Image (cartoon, rainbow, N blue to C red; front, side, top):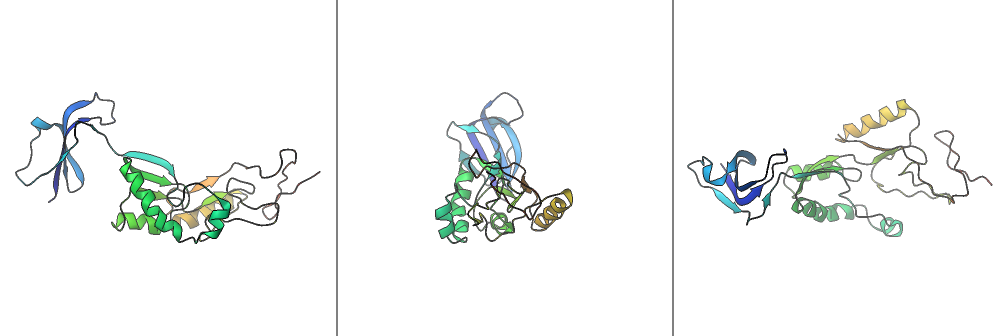
Length: 215
């Protein structure tokens, strides 16, 4: 049994209780077992790995509900020339930095798939617990509808299906497809983005129609 003791720090437990100086947190098999003043904890008679907090603060892991572990920023020229698989290699660094910042649970709002989630859960790469959305569900003209008036269309996640939806029935069917792929936190974009001049109105009609500029 692996036993660790975090000591020599001030505990802020997130419940609203006052900070606890000289705190001790006893961890057994990756689970918090005891919390209190370090000198008063009833420690087991077994080898203990002591972790010195060096007078700092001991806090629960933070939760970030909107991250993108597969990319940092969007650069159309760069992203169109970069192999999609390169994003998985870069995500290893993003996962590590997220965890080292004290964030132990995240909701990836587009980009991470079941493979990235399983890589963390099985210990292939270190990282926070991950809930995935995979890609993004969007309306026509929505935040991730990348059809351009030139006729070209940019795919932020070319390996994943992207759904443009009109009507509740279509939304329901697409959400079910994502949930089947372990997307427990589907993300949808229901806001429009303006991709033409502000002087040119955007006209939307059926699912199969696209933006048209009217003079």
